[in-house]
Length: 390
Image 1 (cartoon, rainbow, N blue to C red):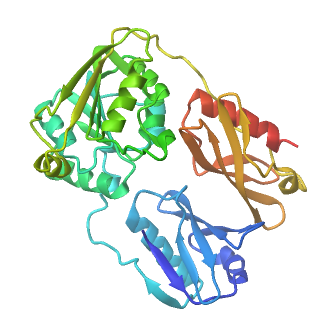
Image 2 (tube, rainbow, N blue to C red):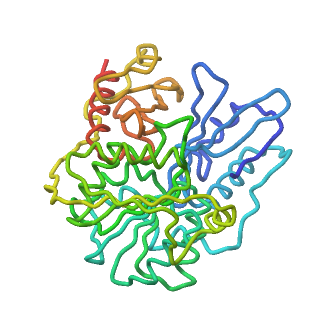
Image 3 (cartoon, one colour):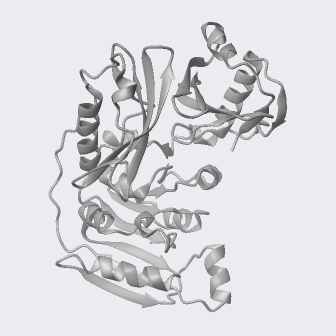
């Protein structure tokens, strides 16, 4: 991803340059680490750049939590900042691509779009982790009466599929660059025909990171129509048996199992596995019930929370575990005397949110955007309000 390696420089230049800067808005310094952050507003996007100083050089790079999906936007911002600060560049990978910025496509949706969205088709299906997009594109071509929502956390894959949507002139695909485990809670009940989970990462050493879990399954059943189905396809024997065990935790369930089923379209990886005569398992879980609609109003405003003198010294440093969720204020950054930027992780143990919280003497807000509006995130949010309102 885009970054610059520059000669060490006097970081006080950043604060001095803020009043005249075209895009820099603040300079935040970590209380306990050397890392620093620069607030950026550019092309309608708000995000952070990181400064990681060393003896021989300083790394200026994007921040993972707040990065925009448009890579060229990051590169342009890095270039502007380096010129405004007159930095001496040692090495760079911010060459601007001439390719059309596909992520401005109408087929690219942000997670917050789903808080109030109209679905253009009566039929909706979801594919989790579409990778190269072969299966997703094929399904969209074959079923023009269905809206396919493709979820993929790997940004280059999202970019490539958006390009294919344009080239193939498809109008029934939405791309979402977000964690599927959180996304499903944004969908209405009984809306999906199918949920495809093809070749998820097994995460044998970190099972808490697996897509398939009891909570994911419960959400899948909620959003599936009656007789809709969740389709798991995996080459991992361990994942297959783990998934079966998870699926049978539902009191009433219909499960179908197939082995080495031939699909009409396969990925290049699956083709390679077939050549190696590797077994591939399909597990279909059919929804047998109608789910009630959820009418939950979740308010993620911080209300009366604001910066008070010495607040940074009162914030808990260790992760706090509660019934069903956790809160961890991971790192605290100071912006001048009376503003804080707090990097935090919170929510579900297997589906944590990562956000920044910005506080000044007048208000408090999530930087850049509020968390996904799930019940467990809301419980964590209320606890963070309590911990910060001291």
